[in-house]
Length: 490
Image 1 (cartoon, rainbow, N blue to C red):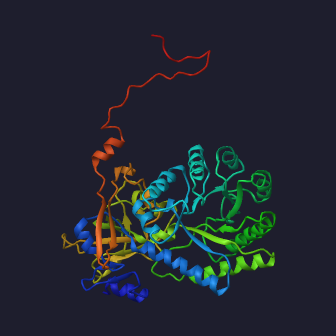
Image 2: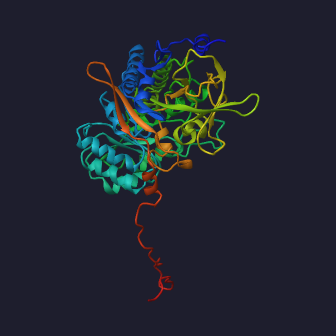
Image 3: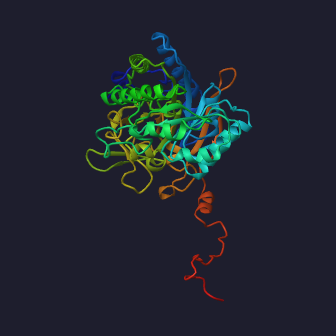
């Protein structure tokens, strides 16, 4: 019977730039010997390979530089990191080493930004693109930063009433404003227009009535984003074209307008077989933007992007041990893992996100088709061929060797999974958050590891659930109405 490595090599071009197998028949990820990491820390184990972050940032900069040179594009390119993809300090600090800027989406991003400024990681010239529907706390933070001299903090208006808060509370002499355009959704969506942003028909009135009359405010940016991300589809190009014609129309009314933000959505690799042509896609974006601007006789805009998953996604991995195999019928063999897909890889079951999945060891063993099952009692806690990009095969386990160990890894899991799964919180069936290890390179290029977080323990869960804290005595509810008082008289 053929070995697992034979199956992979006859199916894919293997080894790849990221993945290879060493002399011990163990998988390496970006030259990291994963079995050595497992022996040191155990499983389940979440990894963050930090050098990958800088690699993707620099790659994006090269893509846009090449495209702008090719078409003699006169605008500039600014790379922003979308913090909601992963808020961890080690992620953002690693990204900031590569001269990038930030995009925020809620009030709770702002203390992170303030801390980075206090520690000298960013300056008041750093672009802070403030997106999202803004509640009072968020508006207050943004106004405070503007008044404190953060000259490149740009609130991107998400609705018609947001501007009123800045008019009444911002005292800075010069305030740059953006407007998010509400795009049409894909035909397969259950609604037609995005809930985010301002309708096309309202943009001109918003500018003329609220922004133009105020000498301290300047409309500098239009923001564009569609949920499907950057793809070479008729839908993407039609929406981008519509957006650019609106930019040109508004530019003639507003000379200060000079930038577009095309959002995030640069795809990451979800299969070993991957042929997305990044350079060709960026070339076509630049060519289309320039062609529409020339057609309308307006200067080309500066371009901002907010790549989140692309920045951090491929830096992440999560490793599991196979703790049991169960033959449930003639055709369905289950390998049970020492973790949970629902709690630790929520996108895999929540939105059907696909990941690269490979065994860590035993690449010289025969293989078999399997289903992977998680630890929770939920029937949705599984990962199988339908969930995966290809048929799901794994090295066969020897029933006669109970000491045999098999480990597997899910790769490119670095974006969103920790926050969606409730990092360190309460999760389904009280499955604990796994250990989290950071892998980096020192000044000599040697691999280093650091335990960022231990596996979550029972005591932390007990505190969250109220079993380890003294609850305050319940107080009576007083309804402020002259005719109603539910408080009992003493």
